[in-house]
Image (cartoon, rainbow, N blue to C red; front, side, top):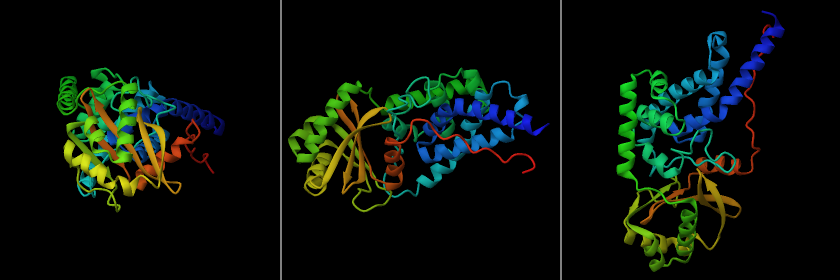
Length: 313
């Protein structure tokens, strides 16, 4: 093969990869709950694609999705072990969905932070099966091939995941209703109004603070309307006066970015049902905030993958 043929082959491989890239990231992110880890998986998929015998691949997008799903499952298995030693509650890393509301998927399923948090309780194969079916609408037979299992087992995996999520979470409200209640909650939290907080919180509300061990973040969840209301009212005078708030979108839902002295200190997200606010999620870990904040003003298009050296270089 001549150098020109190599260049043409690489150019075609790059085009195929870039066309699939949003979907690859969407798969990896939903399985892992981490944008940083998802980017690592996508880069590894690109390296595998370079080394593959592409002449034998009839459907590049399907090949790349399969590679990505399997890599993500393997990383998710080791991530579960690492998260057992994580200091305080672990929450998914937020992503900015203002430019891609569905994050490369057929549907925006398995994307909001509350659902990703619950998906973390599934084993990685169940999670992948649910994601591939519910967000990307792959046929069961294709998912079975991707996960190297039977079609019957794939259906069971998806069914178990659905049952678990239905048992753990009430149906969310519309985006407009979500936004309205978030605004009411934000005002109540800033003023420390116990009565206003109790008005919007469900009886069994849980507040999670993911600080990764940083000072000021609660290392245990706060549970119940009374405890959460008092907790929020107690820290309101110390936390809110020196901060600025910015309305943003995270994982397809309205959220609030809180900054102090020009530096982000928390991303506030809530899970809302018809009953009221079910979960409050404070993402305070700087390692999770930084990529999200950087993405808010980043260019829309991702960078092209690095090309390999030319033959003989």
